[in-house]
Image (tube, rainbow, N blue to C red; front, side, top):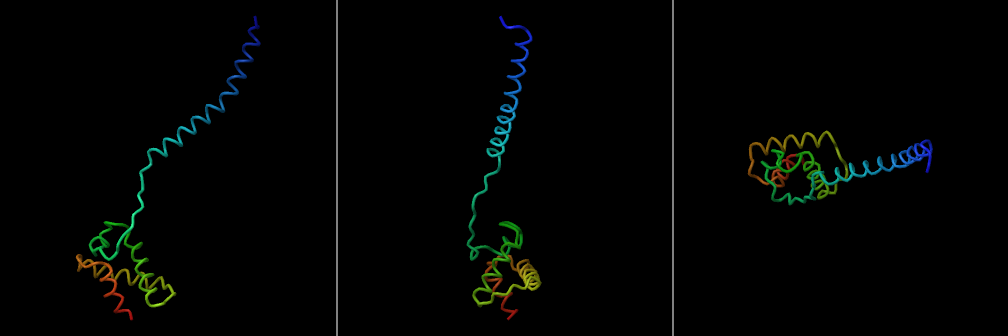
Amino acid sequence: MPSHESQSISTRTLKHRTLPMTKFISACCIILMEAIFQPVRAQVTLDLAKVTCDQWAGYKITNPQNIAIWLSGYHNGTRGNTVLDTQALQARTQRLRDFCIVNPQVPVMQAADKVLVSDK
């Protein structure tokens, strides 16, 4: 029969070996739970020809600045302009926002065309 001292050593050794495994399993469970309970983010595509000024200016789809940057790139691309003037972008975005507040049912692409025509 093993002595009490050897039994105590083997118990300590067993605890020493299983403690890292227990921490590892706990960490894996936490990571798994976070992955399961994170909100699902669907990939969203927009047809900007159908987005109204109200939807754009009212943050109903995304931050309006995101769409304003895309609109700027789209309109500059159609003109072959590769220069980005960040201050002008902010000013145009503000003018577009002002226009959209007064004309909420106008599609934002048409509104951008009207606002950007005055810049030419």
